[in-house]
Length: 231
Ligand code: GLN
Image (cartoon, rainbow, N blue to C red; front, side):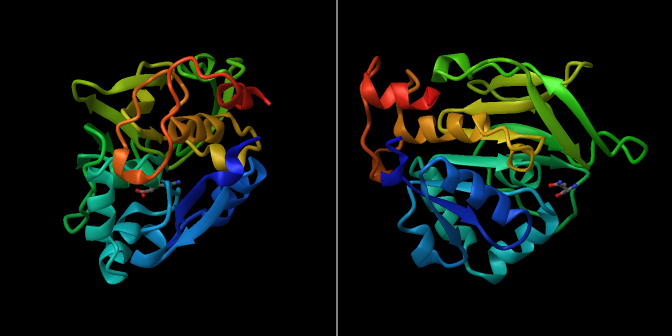
């Protein structure tokens, strides 16, 4: 693995921070809990965990992280949000709280707690587009949903990577921002984290737009770095 040179932050205000840190560490990245602007400044990618998006929104302000995070995202910092993290990265929130402000890093409208109270937690096997392109096994992914949002609308340039059976998008990507309604950090299947690391490395065949993030862009078709994604 060559991920040791990547420093990936996990926004550590609330939610399943430890699980994301563990998943990233197990893939060889340096995983850093981020609670302060100085910590945010050194990361090459940021993960926003599952948890409670209203609380995360409030704590972003309380910890003076909102503006630094918004600025780094606007500069092209790669980001991955799961569940509450997806809501936090979105552009528009339905059924949010009035004082809840999303970061607008990916052009999607999400509906909070969209699957309803009766079936608020469930597992399902999903086909994920994007795995094969990143050199990953594309067998179905066991996705765990916990009071999850779904994606109600996507803007131009947003790619839908997975849908639940009724067609609702639950995994999306725009440029270097990835978001899932479900929680890959708690299942032990590390392919979504591998996909994110490959996005940070810029080796999955797309142009990495994060010139300000300090990572080295690897040309399309690059050899050894690309192959590490399958190990
Ligand atoms: N329902 C939560 C929210 O609105 C998200 C739940 C989760 O992250 N598991 O933030």
